Length: 202
Image (tube, rainbow, N blue to C red; front, top):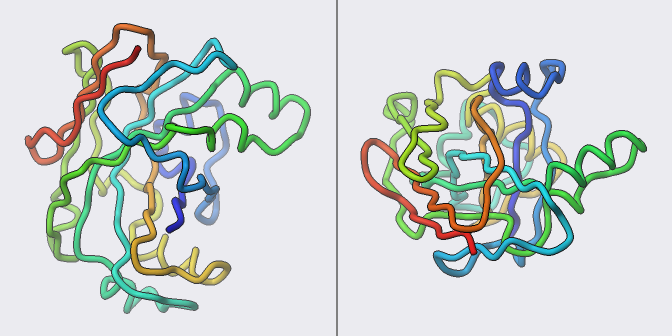
C-alpha cells in the first residue's frame, strides 16, 4: 500500500506558503509506517513545529498504469478524510539547503486517515465539503471545486510514473488555513457534516 500526497493543489494554500502554482500535479510519498494507528498523535521530539493539513483522501480500487483521464473514475469509489502532518521547521531547513524533505513529511504517524469511507460517484465528487477544527475552532474548509487538478487528472498523472494498486491512498491537497498544533489539542475533521476523525495531541 502506498500513500501518495499531492502538494499545492489549492491556490489559496500555495499563496499562503508563498509558492508558485504548479503546471502539473506535484506529488510526494509517505511510507505505510506513516499511518496513525489510533486516535492519539504523540508530538515527536525531533521537531518544534508540526502543522496540520486537512485533505480529502481517495482509495484506489484496482491496479492501473497509464490511465486515461476519461477512465480514471473507474479506479475509485470511496473517499475519506485525512491529515498530512508536516514538520514545518524541518521542511523549511531542507528547502533552504535544496534537499528533499521527506524527513518533514514521511515520519511515523504523519498520515491520519479516517476509519470511515463514504461511497462516492464521479458525478457527486465535486459536491463534497470538508472542515477541520482545532479545539472547536474552524480552521480549514474545502471542496473539490477549489482544487487546481481534479481527482481524475491526479490519478491519470500519477499513473504515468507509478503503477497504482488496490488499497493505495491519494491525499488530494489542502486548502488555506494550515497551522501549528500543540500538546493538548483536539483535532476534528468532518466530511459532508459527518465527523470522520477526532485526534488528541499528546
